[in-house]
Length: 452
Image (tube, rainbow, N blue to C red; front, side, top):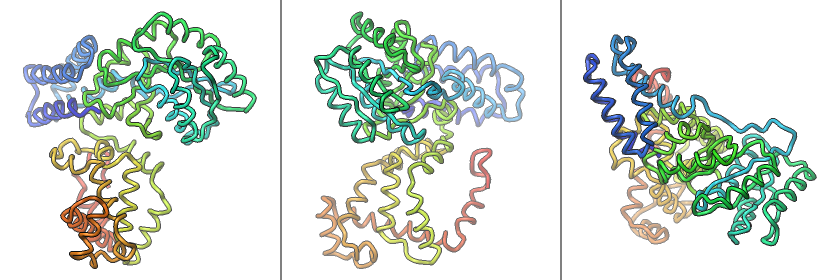
């Protein structure tokens, strides 16, 4: 999400680390570059001004200029101000009321409301064990009701049917009665969007709000609209008592201006960020972790949480036992690892959360893309069980068959076998206590607080 901003800030901060001491001049020069980076990231001008003023006040203070490592001290100031800008702490959903807790989703057409309803239903069911019902009050877009019905099936949420002959208020009342009758914990209400803000739309959603009296009213906004995202959220905030914002399509937004602007412009917290179409591509918004990602320091906490939630621990333990017994790491094992990686959003998503990944050359990042992982899985799937277990048998004619079966080239098969050989070698070292040695070797090279 914050690729371009992270790159520019990373270069600025790298230059700063080389300074023996900070002066008023080089602080001003650094902050000028930070200002340009924020403006290019499409952060709203008032937000940039307040941010730079606040950082300048603290950077000129004795705690930074008089610090033994002034570069690091200034980076901490920038980090703290980024966190403050986005809302200090993560703000979850307030579901503490007599069930069903009603959550009303608002937003413009095309912002991703319906998809977000499906994602949120899955998140609440999996992380909070809630029984969720979803309903569509969008009687203007014929496919909206069917789309939500399909999504509800895929995430095991209860779908309340509605039809185009009913009014949105009638649908909402029917859904609320059904949710109470079926002892649902949460009712997610999808509303109609428009191509632009208009009076009819606002009147309709105000009616729905007064009918349902939702505990949460979330504004869903496309992050790729940059400053417009913050301005649209502000307009909705003036019409409705919003409780939070959901930023969607963050995977297509390399700038990240919306995430930095929305909180200050609307006064409402960002509660979730969504990326991609997959139903598990929604995560709670944590300002401190996002600030860490922007400054290239990674997001280890989110990475650990993701591993705990999405890794098949049974398969992982089975592989660990196999390696400990000195058995070979075969291509079937490699496929399992690649599939688990894909479940966590692919290598690119993992790299985004790893400290120092921003310093990797663009070529390395490109090779770590999801496409490469899919190609490797396709190659392994094209092999026989015997070939997966004994890769050494893969010679000329077999390689050609595997390449043809996956729609790839023989050199792709060779590359896969080379990568497998390297992974296999690493696994053997780990089985002989090499992991402990490797960790000791990394001592002092990790970020503060992550030593072993």
